[in-house]
Amino acid sequence: MSALNIIRKKFPEVERVRDSRRTIVIRVKPIDTTSGRKKDPASCALARACVREQIADAAIIGIGYSWLIKGKVATRYKTSTGVGREITSFDRHQDFAAGSDYKLSRVAPSARMNKYKGNGGPHKTKRDDSKTVVHHHHTANIRVIRKVK
Figure 1 (tube, one colour):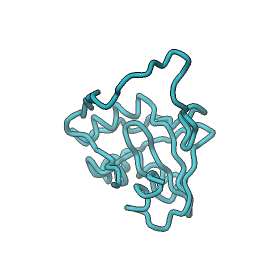
Figure 2 (tube, one colour):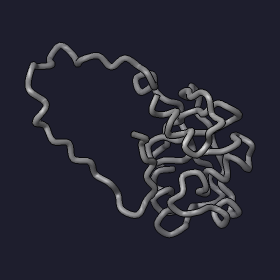
Figure 3 (spheres, helix red, strand yellow):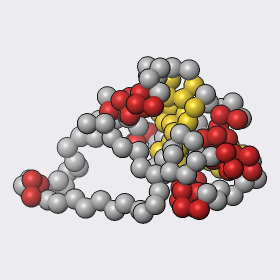
């Protein structure tokens, strides 16, 4: 399980991962902004706020998904667009708008881990996809959560 390996890299005590089925709201205070570190998903302002508010023991905040660790369980949340913009600002200038509420949303049923995706719909044509080149866009100067190979 790749997600568990990524989480265990920083938090070896985690034994299980799951998707969230509810949305949570976190309030970021000025102390979170000043004590947070740029480009560090586990020590940014929002991660510090999650720990300060005792929502989690630790957190990994990413652009697409965020992980809140409580005991031996890591719960995955969908990072909202507003949080993603604040992450970009924080990683570039250490500026996270304090005093605001930020959402980490539940994971939609279609995006849950281990969800069977199938081979495509009824309009899937048979073709040779081995020659398809996928180009990934990476935004400059923001955090990256690396996959474990």
